[in-house]
Length: 165
Length: 172
Image (cartoon, rainbow over all chains, first blue to last red; front, side, top):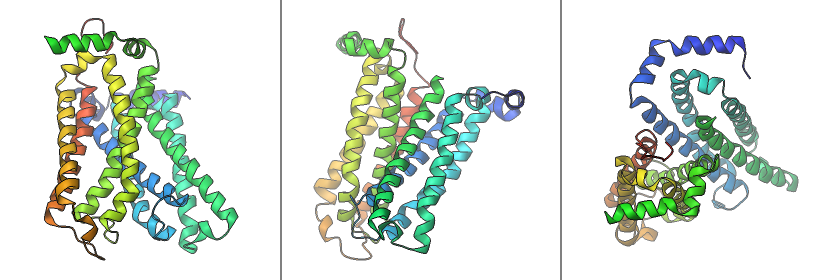
């Protein structure tokens, strides 16, 4: 997707003092990318643990909501870190990010991942064993776990591909 | 120099040539490498934070490691294989890169820390008491060291990409 408004936004961003600083100071981009990767590492490990618990491979000594309660906050705390570091990278290279189809795909995936996480978390608040109340719920839980993990994996892969597109 | 000859030989292998010359092979392997590293670092951090006494305190360390470490090892194996493939494709360039060499040393230190933990510090991990499980000081120190080392591994890894000075004929 490329619109005139997006072109103008990129052109403006590129010439802001902040963008100039990010472009010219050597250590900013690798440092910001390092923090971005560490934050996504926290998310990925948490997502993996929750999803392994959903399919019943780990942590069966703890109920689903208690187990998720250990890892869900990590996801929600890492997201603002990812947002801030992500924005810094965008400001540094607006055209290569905002107008990049892989970046746009990644943002759609991020929104899906957030929706999936909320969709998993919300019913647990009302009923701690929601995902295990019936056979159908258990199957839905396994599907949700698989889809969630695949979406997050795709986000990481798309993130790296932005640099090559 | 002997080492340089080995690096050149690695670069000349058909696998290395295919990765260096293929259009999308390098980015795909790199993607898998990054994905594996996020899972290695994230899962190790879960254990480290437990050792330090910061998270999962209501879970015995031995119970937690049984859940987490199998994932860490699978992810580490993937990261090592993909890392080796990426290295081969530009062996001479990486072999002379400060951050690449630094990353390898950091990995060795992280490995040493882990062996020390399993052999010495965590020998009696099964007996580290019941709720709330507190960990002995050496375990806390091992957790801090591990966390710092893995953060540094990620940072050095990222800096490699910004400091490559390609030798003649090699792709940047």
